[in-house]
Image 1 (tube, rainbow, N blue to C red):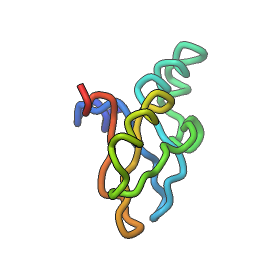
Image 2 (image 1 turned 90 degrees about the vertical axis):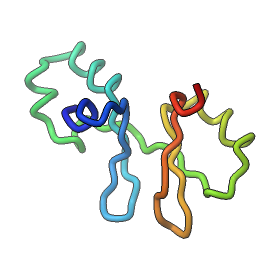
Image 3 (image 1 turned 30 degrees about the vertical axis):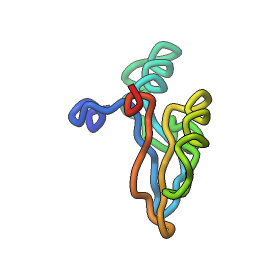
Length: 94
């Protein structure tokens, strides 16, 4: 949560080495805090509270295909040559 606050971002992918293993967001943290103890949630490891991974699209994918995907996810990771090169969020489109 401190990393997101410091960088003015709402969500982050959780990467283990080169693998996208999950996601974490302000809304996820907020919902977990509301459902339980704030101290317990904030002292948890990311792997204990993370959500499923953001979808990944190839950098060459047309934006017309990518945009509708944002209806069902908070972010989309962009990859090129098996490396993550970017992230697309709803805020990027506004």
